[in-house]
Amino acid sequence: MSSITGGRVIAEMLQAHGVEHVFFMDAILRRGLVEMEALGIKRILAHSEIAAVYMADGYSRVKGKPGVCMAQSVGAANLAAGLQDPFFAQTPLVALTGRQPAPMQYRNAYQELPHEPLFRSTTKNSMRVDTIEQLPHILHQAFREAVTGRSGPVHVDIAGHTGDAIASAKLDEYQPAARPFSTLPGFRPPAEDRLIEEAAQLISRAERPVIVADQGICLSRAEKALRQFAEHSSIPVVTSLDAKAVLPEGHPLNGGVAGTYSRACANQIVSAADLVIFAGSIVGDHISHNWTLPKQGVPVIQVDMDQAQLGRNYPGTLGLPGDVRTILEQLTKACPSVERPEWRARVQEFVRAWNAAAAPSRTSDATPIRPERLCAELSEVLPPNAILVSDTGYSSQWSGTYVELRHEGQRYLRAAGSLGWGFPASLGAKLAAPDATVVCFTGDGGFMYHLPELETALRWGLNTITVVNNNHCLAQGARSILSAYEGVNGNREEIYHYRPMNFAAIAQAMGAVGIRVNHPSEFAAAFAQALASDLPVVIDVVTDPDALAPLAWTP
Image (cartoon, rainbow, N blue to C red):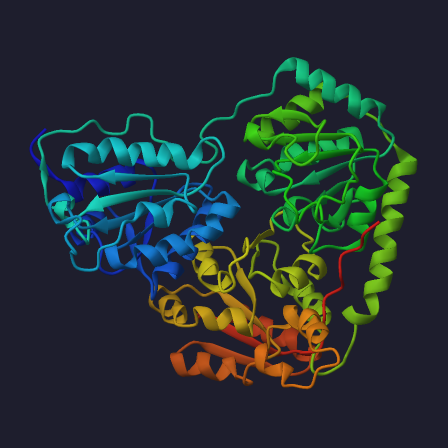
């Protein structure tokens, strides 16, 4: 092989690992970006490092393969902060940054900070490329680590504050990636037969078992295996927000979203169960509502790729380490087919009761519009191929509990906690699935974080539909703010209200389509107009700032 530049090595290694898009903020690896163009890799310039991460995150979640994001040395801190959300979501990303080369370290070089501490908390690993000879091995290892074990972001710090000390260096030869780690999960290990047998016995003896499906189901693409196991064993399924779309709304075993951002019926089902199967879950505080659902002492089976998580929060758990899709297939074979008619009837009664209680707000004609009615209207118009991308906070609470996903082809992505994630993530999702209808559900507070990325959508022809729940405030904090002000005079609105904004007008001024909705009856027509548009669309829905999402049901 003739001499090759580091930039070409980077481009070839990315191509070998199935990378079709990279997301970045200038200035980083310019020589590499030139080589990427020659290999057909699309280079998506964002308006901030964090937005680049969120785009890569949404892209990876839809595509099921590692996303790539990049920033120069001075932008590394922002990139590291953005990686918090994909770290929580176990999204496999490879984050490339530049840093000053070794001779300039520890000498007050321009814009230089130690990068390893910045990335220590938001990545699985942070590796340095100091010489061109290291580059192929470290890039291959980064992709391997991103998709194996508990998946997540991996950081590679490349010499040169834009990475070009390595990108411009020459390498006589290198070993291409013969077995690239280009899809998630990297491996599908089964559980041991003895553990499957023990789990099958627990399931057979249970009268009221429930499956709590979590984000690992989506990471493993285990939706079909989950459905087959649930139907085979007649076990109801409740989900985390991340796994909301694993069963269509009308499926008789679908008990809804459980945990802290939840439907009461789902929490009631978990509370009534005599066996809880956490599928693809690390069993954090949200899915268990601070580990109160189920109560301590209820038998638990936990399936997760990360062995260290098994039984962490429920001592005595039967842990099944491995790939959740493979293990659900094992359980389907090991468990006898049963009916459990009494338990299924009780589950369906919980669901009916929740629907009845929610009906008044879902059908309300009040203005400003109730968020529950907005979600009901959105449920009616979402196409069968829709990908609904939700921001965090109230956006995920409203959409997770009140939007109905009625078709198997629909998907739901939500922020793991970073406000503002939704809109740039929806752009990444659209790049990953250009033929799908990608809808972002966000609030005015979240949309304002990365509003400039509307220009990115226009530049790349990413015709997403952004629904803004515009109540000109951060309503999720209202309860605690009102409580703090009880008996105290003062301007409480100062700490959670914004000035009213017309996002439809802003979208129009930027060259996109903006539609203002003031009454719930207007939403269907607005969405139809958005579907017909050949531009990105912002539907600005004026909603009630005093509407508060219900608190989680607890035993």
